Length: 113
Image (cartoon, rainbow, N blue to C red; front, side, top):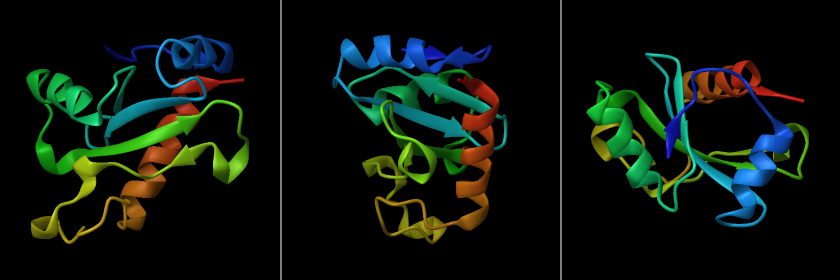
């Protein structure tokens, strides 16, 4: 598990994926602090890492990166940690458009070709 401090390449993501799910890397974004945590078997573990680092729960969103995919298929907004009725998100999906856009922006910032 790590909080990304500098951009990483798709090749780096592929190597990380090989050690866990083969073709996917689980991630959690802090959309307020502009951080992404990666490389765990559970989104909840990445969530805990960010909470211990000072993040607030309401700013954390889980998603997956499919390392062999391109465009819209690269990022999947699916995680159990996203189920938060109290925040208007009763789904595993990230329903908040602003949060989705913030995640896409962070992925573009931290994942290079």
